[in-house]
Image (tube, rainbow, N blue to C red):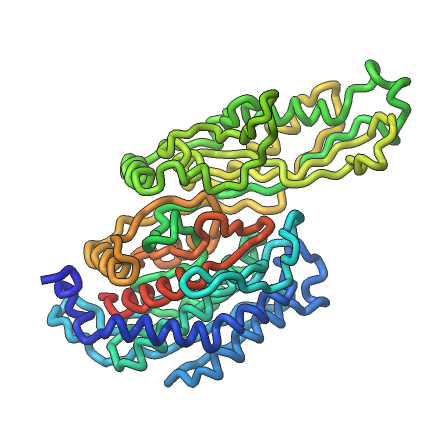
Length: 503
């Protein structure tokens, strides 16, 4: 008796046919849809203040809506919802197939509902794309299971809406029983989902009793198995500005008299993290790591090993002997690396103003330095509290009485998954074994999906499956982002299996 045989809901499912049907739809249609989607510069509103006038978010969401309608799914309703000046969301509702579940268990809810989530807004362009590639230039490389689609948003996560509907269609083609499936696709996620609470509140009564949430907006430790995200870090984004003069002055005149605005900024950042180690020091930005998550980090480290750090595009230089020496990671202990990127705070400077280009930099003491800061927070730290603490830490008692301001523009609390029920854990292992030949693996992610925290509050009893295709070198948010199409096909089929097995 196989593990699949122990899940009665899957007895009628032809898993080989399921993958064939999913793969055929990807090859015949979905990949080309994503090629067209990559061309749309649908930057999130936080990176495009004129998003409404430009219309790119509307273009992306209309493409998805039109494609869903064209699939002819029985009973489907789909609409684009707009609330005043907010970014739009796409909402679809597909009724259950199969009537009463064949599981002879009176405790089973036969009006099961699954909510599938994704987003269509994108990160900005970023520099450093390979020759021939670009954020809005779709390029297919490779063939078969190793084919990749390069371009912004391909993996993060324009594929989600297409994969979700394809999974449903593959089950319906076999006449396999499945729950009601609703979809919520937003266009504000990369800006912190600040428009989403209004839509969630309005749509919650129409969603009903959600048993399972499937979010297709996360990462994968490798391309060898299905990865389940157990936690997400929170985030505070904002700008630190240091002003010391009203205009620039000759550095020969001011040097040694006027404090450098950059040096003041350096001192302020030292209040947050240790410049030698990167450790974020204030306790308000840290939390205790649950024992279960430490254990899962150890299991994931056993799987991933050195790939936890080798997967990054490290720079190198030649030493005196002509040997290439690569930049080194903070540590080579994979357990500590996993915990660092999932359960510990981390500060990054992601942008700067007040610094002229090197070609234009004269011998001038600059009047101001402005730095865009990104502070990743452990999943259990409240983001609003952290944002206020960050502002106070940076602004209070500034060196030399410099004019220091910190303004945060996004604060999103992280998420820690509820304990999975046995049926879901078994189902995930079976789905992963079926299509990847290995059981599912569990690991936290360092990114932020504000939607998950919101859903946890709105549907506290729902099970959560957060997964995705952002595996090694896929480089979401950076240059050369790509979607691993072979992996996405298998994940689509695995999600279909999960839908068929929901209790």
